[in-house]
Image (cartoon, rainbow, N blue to C red):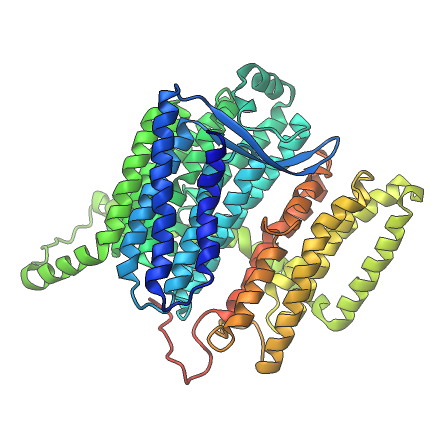
Amino acid sequence: MEQLLQLFIFLPLAGFCLSLFFSNKQERIISGIAFTTVGFQFIGILCFIIYWLFQHAPVINLKHFVFFKEDNIEIFLDFYFDKITAVFSLLGALITFLVLVFSKYYLHRDSGYKRFFKTILLFYFAFNMTVFAGNFETLFIGWEFLGITSFLLIAFYRDRYLPVKNAMKTISLYRLGDICLILSLWTSHHIWHENITFSTLDNAALVTAHISENYNSVLFLLSMIVIAASIKSAQFPFSSWLSRSMEGPTTSSAIFYGSLAVHLGVFLLLRTYHYWDTVSSIKIAVITIGILTAVIASLIARVQSTVKTQIAYASISQIGLMFIEVALGWHIIALIHLSGNALLRAYQLLVSPSVLGYMIHDQFFNFVPKQYQLSNSLTSKISNSIYLLNLKEWNMDAYLKKLIWDPFKFIGKKFQFISNNTSLIFFTVLFLIGSFVFYFDHQIPKSIDDFLHISFAFIGMILILVAFVEKRSPLKAWMTIILSQFYVVLSVAFLNDEYEYTEILFYIGGLIVAAIIGIIILQKLKIKEPDLCLNDFYGHIYHHPKLGAWFLMACLAFIGLPFTPSFIGLDLMYSHIDHDEYTLIVFITISFLVLELAVLRIFARLFLGPHKKQTHPIAYRSS
């Protein structure tokens, strides 16, 4: 029975790989592969759950594959099945199948037909990897793929300015959630001294003992989990990204942002509940987030002018209530509530174009404007103020940009003078000298060693921030990003003598291959398009689709997605950072936070958006 779990997880990935061999014109075959894959999975999961219930619903934990093993660390895939997984997996299979059936006709003859179905299958694989995960490492694989498929689905209409811009906004917040999850992994390594499984968290006595011994570290770990869950489920103050994400096709909005992915924050809280059940401050924080979100999102939903935005905020408010239910321990109610909300929002989004058409027709013939009376009373002033505040969505977009991203851009611009060729040569030579010194690390005094690893981490952070704001040369931005990651690795190597060459090669190996592919693609594009820069979105994927596809693969490999060894190397690198190295962890965390944004920014600006040549039709900036 346990072996079937692996089939459920990897079946969508097999469908994705099979669909690669067919062209966009072969719509029946492409949609047929998707229907067959997901339909078979739905029937299989349903039969599996029935059989599982007759076996008295045992909790299944399956250690699938070990990526890396040493004395102090083991990185492995682990699958887990309980009532939470049962609900999410069955719900996911049902909604995905229904949306795929709808999409067959909704996207008929669309130029991105094949691209949509491939992305949905990849999303469904990521969803399964997340809900079947038995440890944080496995969950993080699915979590990362969900972020990338989110970016691709929002930017599906890549000839328009706004979908591409909103895709970057969404992935920026998703990346913040990814970093919070990485920090929780890092803290967990130092608390448990091993990669724990979620079944370990069911041992209440063991968890309580660890919390009492490492209260401050556990509090930080749980805070990171709560922030990651809040971002993924668009809870206040991170709610604005969900309405922006509706720029994608209606069908992707229905499956991704209306029903499945947006509820994964609730899943994360449910999965880790035994860890934070006894920590009162975390429970209060979750309840507070839920109450604020439920009230604010419901008010925002009432005044929005677009039907998709109304549905998005209505869904957010219900998820806020689910946060409260989870914190209070009402898990069965939360799962029922979640299932009802997911099915309702998927249905609402799928029928929204038709309903909107009927309402416009009815309004045209029967609309009678309401008679408003002007009033200067205090009540009306307060009411109007609240109305305007909700109409502007509490300015969450502007505040998040000002508090999180603008400081990074400010620092990057202040140091932009180092982005010239001379400075890059200087930092390359400095890195080579640092590598040579590292070879004799055991002979260096500790005070100098401590200074070097902090200095190299700081240089790596500054370089990635400079690349983040670079607008003149894509190749220079790419080279700066590469150099920054080498400095990050060197800083950790200087810190910890146990960080061995094999572990360094795991990260550097995947990095070098992606870096070389990226350089080759950018040079080829430069030959074909001499005036290459990053000032705007240029849409070069029209004329150079193969270059765009290969560069996207290089970008995904560079940020350490699990199809490269860099994913293992990143986990190993963080495990070698000491728990009291606060300055180092801040520098390296900022580097990895900005890394994905800087890399995808190059891809988006070069290959997505309205084509710069006037011979192509130009979509309006606002859609």
